[in-house]
Length: 90
Image (tube, rainbow, N blue to C red; front, side):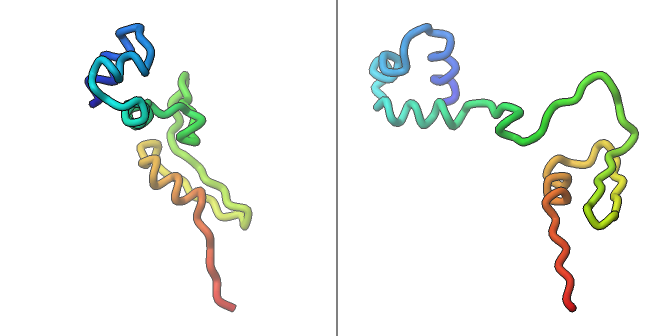
């Protein structure tokens, strides 16, 4: 299906026309178009920074705790640390 979506983008025809030409329902074809759409920065929640190479990433929490992480820390780890909740028992 990814091939069909790429071919449709290059074809210049409407989604409805391309779906009909390839014996697909329009709803199903639109599902696959959305499935293979590349995420934008707004959808991922992260912005690509160009022009400098930081030595580390520093996360500062409201309680004053700072974490210094290497720049190659995976995005999913950063995301989980940003949304980390401290649960303390009293």
